[in-house]
Image (tube, rainbow, N blue to C red; front, side, top):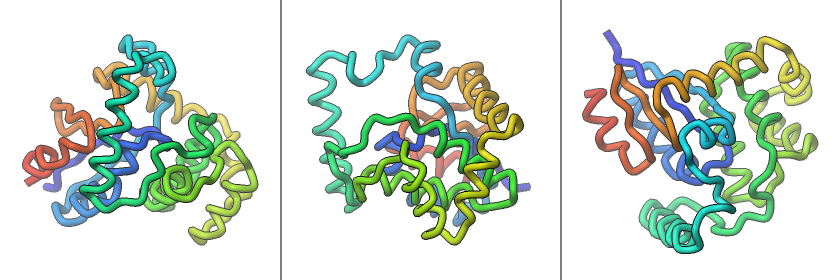
Length: 197
């Protein structure tokens, strides 16, 4: 039987973006089943006592930029350290990918395109026209997805994902859950691979 990994993530998390391609390759090569769960960062940070980025000590903010640069260069993943449209309200984009999954679409592919839009392409996730354009580029009906994103079932799933993450002890993104074990951060993907082997 295939093992399952639940992936809790935020679409504008640079760490999720940096690990996304490796995660997808790992899921494919291991034959695992992945459950992708976009969450709201604010409530999750509040529940865990994590400060929002702008409120963290300047030393931690500076170190974050060093680490992002190191990982970007190490992985060869394009990443702008100071994206023009960050942070923004990512809720419409998150609900869009949930609507896509509910309709049988590839949530991982659309999520990856949206993350790339923030961190490599200087695009605004809070802008409806941008989301429509990303949908078109991915071969999906962005207009229909954004309309579906307002459905109570989609909004309920977004809230349920966040609540589930809080209840499971998630405090940062991305977090991978295999059985009862949590793996926080894209730099834990080697351990995720071992757990799925």
